[in-house]
Image 1 (cartoon, rainbow, N blue to C red):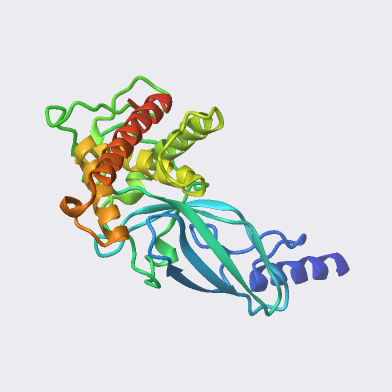
Image 2 (spheres, rainbow, N blue to C red):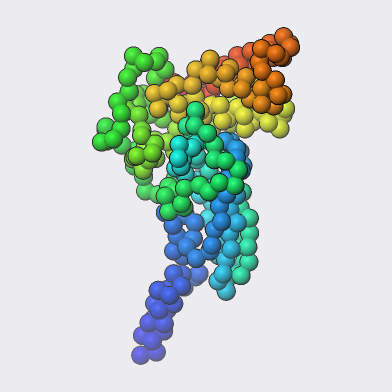
Amino acid sequence: MAAMTCARACLLLLLVFGRSATGTAQAAYPCGLPVGPQYAITATGRNSGHLLTIAAYNPAEAPCDIPPTLVLIPGTAGTQTMICRIPAARLPAGGMQQLVLRGESIAFGRPALSLNARPAPIETWISAAADLAPDRSLPEGLIPVDTGLHRIFLRFPGTQAPIGFLPDFEARLPDAAPLLFALHARVKSAYDTAWDAGRIRLPFARDQVYQIGLQQAMWYVFSVLENAPYTRAALRQSLIEQTERDQGLQYAAMPAAMQAYIDQSAEEMWGMIRMVARGAGVE
């Protein structure tokens, strides 16, 4: 009888608190963030690196663990879709902690979330740890690739099979998630290999080079999926616009040396992007 009473008590605790006898299990959103804490999430206004900040408050009387998770975050109102890393953290009982989510945008040509804007609700975030199986068929809502539109062909990561469809990021993001996570992992791995070998050389400050180059490579690969490939001309134009914002000058009014620097930067970045895509085995 005592054993049965104890078992019932343990079951009641599990139902009420969502925790196992060891205290490790807890209810969680699909993205892996535990249910219970309160989250205030804001954007930094950037499209790469530190993308989001979470102010997490734990009202419970016990600490709450947040597991490290890679998540796919839908864009809102035409803004960038993002792949971010939620860092591991332990929220103290009755305490608050700030989490920095770093990652990359994967939809070139769309604006980043503005400073302090709220991203899509966490209920819509997709975790890479979820049971997602890549589907090489043509699900309803995905657009066949028009190979005559461009001469860049992507393959399923790690295979020789060509990708025969383009994901509709907004309408069918869960269907596209396995492919997006796989491509992201392959591109980042190839980029890190090239970085460690000293092959990433770009005309930017050293503390900026890593993230700038990685983001450019991501945009290139994912833009092809959307049938709007990130071309050499588009890259050059993006550098021109960035320099115009930074310098407060129109390109035509810039000194010849600055114009030449932009052109050189574009050529070097384009070569780096193609090198990473080949290293990732997707081109």
